[in-house]
Image (cartoon, chains in turn yellow, red):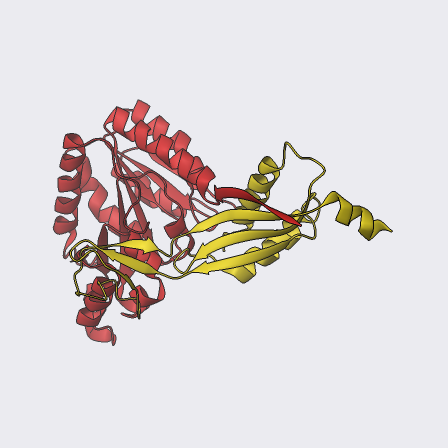
Length: 123
Length: 230
């Protein structure tokens, strides 16, 4: 349960990105989360909702892009998914692999509400 | 509606400090090991056995991470080297920032080895690189042999897995072979040792493993980032 700290990092990263555009309103924040990132998306969602309430990001949605766990084989060069948490190459069975994807934990993009849409919403 | 790119890692603030720690350790020739396990697996008991042996040859400092209290620090104070308590308050793990100034202190104090006892937890500490040279994790017989598949990230992260409390094997349904197989599924090639802190079985092997790593550090001072899990 360290999602609160991660939510704070997320809020900080987004606000830094928007520093040059203080009027921007964020509708959604796209977050890539690897299968083996060690993060609960429900807990992160909840932490973000609570911790962003007093910031300009209040009301923004988190959209999670889940990344499957895959290995790149150092023996045969193929990429294969990890099944049943067995970290061996799915193609040749070699143990000489490294994680190719599935450890991601990053903010990728923001969906901003256009000023005209904001004005329209006020009418 | 339009989209803009951010591309910011959410553990980047911790990873940046971990990098600083790694350089600090390299610069001072200080070897740091991060000891992790579930609560009650025997981290402090293992250190009570290992620290006096390590301290025969090296100046060793300890960083003791606990949510509250200093009961473990009091146990470890007996070995005679510096023991620094970090209370995390509510946090379930140590992070790179919490250990940074203590590592600095140990380096200034002339320590060659820093042993970091993390907060007992199989989940959160795995996510937080401290900048350590090696991660050692304990799996005790009373926890069950299925744990590697339940907490894969922690077992991926480890450079050494120690099966502890083997004196209790006869009294439990713990299968040593199944535990080793599960560890090897999650992390093929990882070193595995077994210990009993009650009988002293396996302690010398743990010390010998650490001695080899300390020697390796002398030859190659800058540790790779906590890479296995990444």
